Length: 115
Image (cartoon, rainbow, N blue to C red; front, side, top):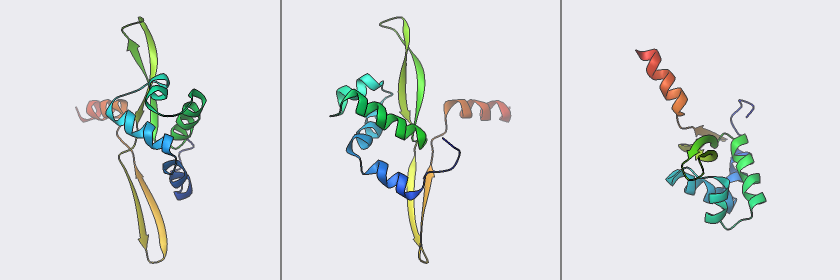
């Protein structure tokens, strides 16, 4: 992501997409790989990867590496990085605020700094 929060058109475009909503709701229940998302969503593998890319660009999901006990290797899973989206209409101006989840690394850093 460029560091700039997504604009209202980007957020609306993401949320109008059924596959995006399914990815967000599924990963909010448990971290999921792209393959698992393909099994849980009514979409092809390429569609899942394109939507994940759009969600990463908006900073709505993050990719994490997790050990895979079945294969002895690691796998990439996706987790939401989104707590709340607020749209406000105030004095003729429409604005959007996206509140992201606190990443585990950020939480750990904050914990260490507070010691």
